[in-house]
Length: 260
Image 1 (tube, helix red, strand yellow):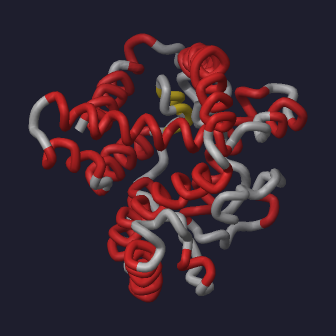
Image 2: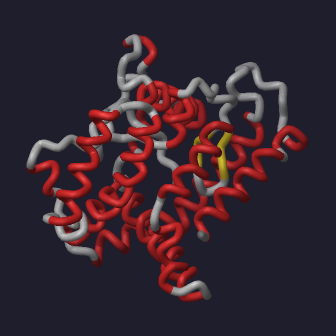
Image 3: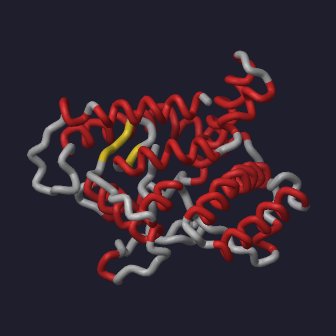
């Protein structure tokens, strides 16, 4: 539930942007550029001084097979939301495939720590509530950088809320214990997921530094390109896709901006 509260706070902050951010950007997709650049600088500082050192420490003390197992476990949990969004988008064949993948990994793969589904050629899909809203015709809206969460949009904020609602870790801690112990379980599991994800991205930030003169613009354009690619399931004109290195974790689309 703590994750859900954080998302709601981010949504409130977004609602206040009209009153405190610059609106004279030349790019109509980025009317809050002044705010966004400041928040990106803040997020970069958090990453440099907190996230990256913690991720390096996690990588150093964690055996590679354990690191991969943790990544697989959270990926398997995320498949619950993927299945729900498959159904909401009317992708019923994919719903069945992802359901089979989740059941196999949970039952045979030791709660998902072993990715048996991939061994059986059950493809990992990437669906979230932001994509579902896009399929339903909800416009993206202007670009906004959220504290801690990184690149997003008004639709993306609603998507974060929807994803939190579909994540069992939002509730599992309070099911175990409705008091501070439950909150600690939910918060701890969320923190571990973020640290594990950041550790998996170590070394990939060089793409942004080497490929872009303006790092801020690189992340903004990558965000819109990646979202468009995912919503249209890769069916976009070649000139609409930023020619970045493909994501190594799921093989879908151009490189997503580093959210840390």
